[in-house]
Amino acid sequence: MRRCGWRLFCGWALFTLLFFSLTACTAFKPKVEPLTASSKAPPRKVVLPSVTYQGVPCYLHEVRWPEESLSVIARWYTGNEGNARILAKITPNLRTNDLRKGDVVFIPQELSRRTDPMTRSYARRFGKSPTPVKREAPKVAPADEDDFPEDGTPPAPYGPRTYPD
Image 1 (tube, one colour):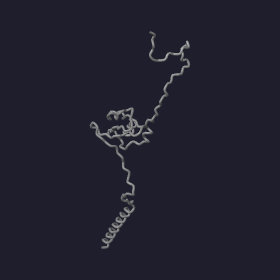
Image 2 (cartoon, rainbow, N blue to C red; image 1 turned 180 degrees about the vertical axis):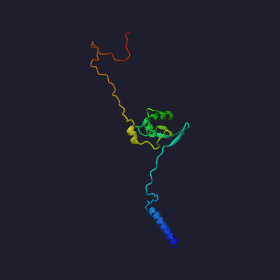
Image 3 (spheres, rainbow, N blue to C red; image 1 turned 45 degrees about the vertical axis):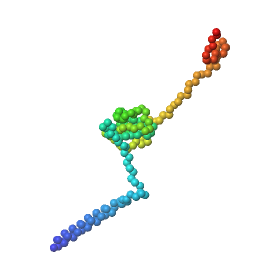
Image 4 (cartoon, one colour; image 1 turned 180 degrees about the horizontal axis):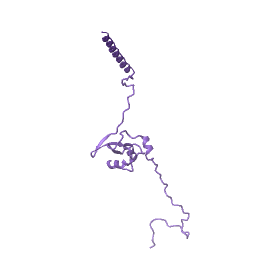
């Protein structure tokens, strides 16, 4: 009987040790407060809208800044500037050399590596710098001081000629 008592004591001791160790582990877990109107909501991940064009699932990118070019858009979404040609082929009615604010570029989902919209800082860093349009001054003919013919007679005015009868 002595052996049985010792085993019973060890079993209860092991059980209480496990019980208190498990409750102690849960005591150190951080408390999660429920979301309320005053607490900040976690940031939402923004994903590009998608569409299927000619059987190819694509993301839609809208041009927002003047620094954007097709190669910069391809570099951001696919990781390779060379994919700009593919984007130009798949996007209908795209002016490849003249992207303007509001133009939409189709990015095939099989090529895309990221789905978050392009940032302004990235477009500025890798994009073309918007060059101001240089306007040339109109060319003015040099004023000749010698407007009169060599014989000194005043020039005839423009208009209908009168012929002698």
